[in-house]
Image 1 (tube, one colour):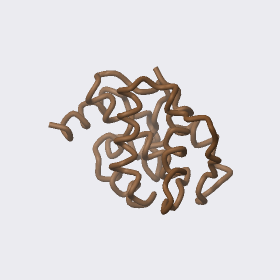
Image 2 (cartoon, rainbow, N blue to C red; image 1 turned 135 degrees about the horizontal axis):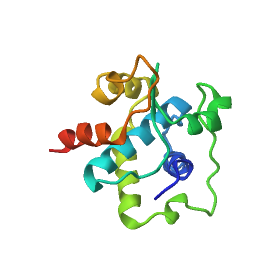
Image 3 (cartoon, one colour; image 1 turned 180 degrees about the vertical axis):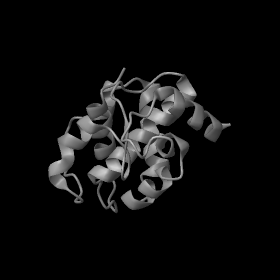
Image 4 (cartoon, one colour; image 1 turned 90 degrees about the vertical axis):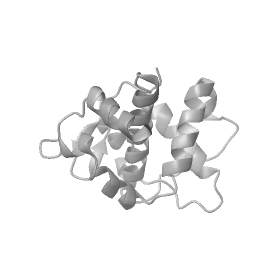
Length: 147
């Protein structure tokens, strides 16, 4: 199973390769890993990473990941492209999954993604309490989205 920090680095890496990208803020990164986890649960019946996702005011958040990047505030998280490709640590199915999530959701702004999650039951069912969003609820919701 992947580590959420590694998944996040993949999204930052993919975005850094784009010439016209606006960068990824902490808020946007949170939503990308949420969608990666949700669709992975629905497609493979397994989590992509172990870290829990909580329902915060601005949508689903992995607290550990938030703390890693909070110093950047609303600004894009810097990522220096180098020889290391973080996708190389994943198997082919995981790489394709992360790339597809980025292709579909990476085009949206952080606030658009935030608003999208505010219309989805995994967040709606827990948003008042900053509860952990259970993987089984995410899986059920995202399975309906791919049917």
